[in-house]
Length: 626
Image (tube, rainbow, N blue to C red; front, top):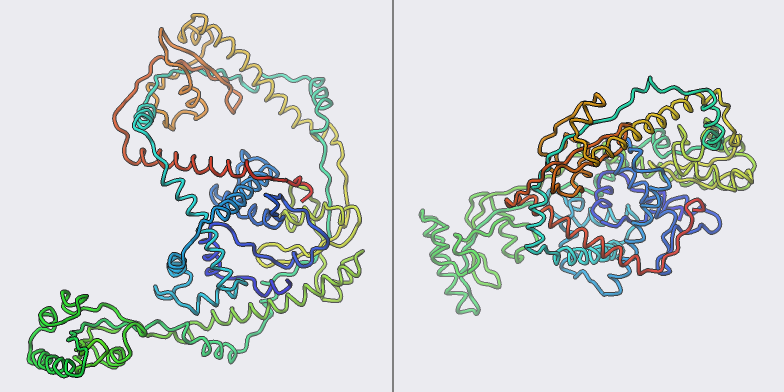
């Protein structure tokens, strides 16, 4: 599978194809070829493997979407890398279980629907029209045959039909809709006060710092760290040194001239007089000749078409046939049409249907992009192909040398004139430079590299990069001296004490309120300020969402106000008073109703997915072993 390097896809067209397919294609690379031994699957679903590469690719896509969604930085609230990978694996398990189910239930995509799906994809079109040459070329560049690609579409389309069936049959009964409207429009009158101790008032003794440090010793250890030596081969770097012959570029242009030409389109009208036999043909010719003379003498082509044309599809529209490409009409008709000039009226034309008069209205398309316009694109295409061929040979030689002299990467670097580089220190979860790549960190801490001291196999990274690594130096986990972490320990203790003080004071205040004291009395006694929020809507953004959610879970006040409280993210404790609830049964706007129905259908579909994956026989490999 080394030739997968040659099959690597570049450019927006390939990304467009991948985007349009709901379940990601498995794009195999160099690493799968050089991988030695059995690699544990990420999971087994009813006996079918979810490979480690499936998980890696899905995880990379998931992180990229999260990063784009949050402006390049994934919030800490999404959890650590292990949690994210577990989430992605669960999604893959659901997808595999769903695909197996739709195959068992014989969901199908028909030929006509498949044809429509493919022809509607922008990535296979040129100037708005499906182009067979582009279709076949792009599939070849992806390493797919048309049959394989179409089968993938059939499978994904069948899964889409299952989803559509679940969503389309979802409904909301009137009582539920009324309840949704009432609850959605409900407002609640609240006031709040906040217990907030000043951080400067917190005193922390040295003995407390030492005690906390000792009791939490495992939290103040440096992680295991490594430095690695590595050789990196990049397609982009190789491309920079590839020279392209202009004659080769021109030859590529001539060989693919059709791909750079748009189809010629002619807009025309016609008048048809039908004829089935020789006698009918002579009579039809006489009639069509007379009609032609009337047009030449100034009468309207469209009016005469409406009166005399025997083509039921176009007669009522003045004979208008719309836009016509080559290959659409019968040969004799098309030959005449594509030989005419704009506004020209043809001589009578005979076809198997009878005799025609043709009038050409306009000509569009038929242009061919100049060589100069596409030269840069073609040069980059050829340069990429040549570079892919070079990287294929280079990686193969590098893999052989790294295996044969497994105790060092230096001989391979010297023999192939490649740079041997050394990373900075990094741990399993984070690093800079080459160690920012998760695959590199994972391999660096593998048994083969860390314990056996061997050169790694090829590691395929994004952007057509291949890396080989080996251990340079290892630094085991160590207890950090108290002096180094004193500030962090003290800060952590301060936060803990601050929260404890606020929680204690707030809880005592809440107990007094529930015992009969009013909020005004509590505020006055403790010199706290009451904030009157008035009637708050369920989606009102000015109030902390955690508080708002708690308020709308509180029971309606029956006799007097009801109270609740909670500790918030900054360590403060907030008490809130709910004194009134107003329901508004006014019909919600249609957008809200549609969103509710959509959310309900999504919940039903997710429930079906969970059911299918719950029924499946699933075996998960521990993530640390993948």
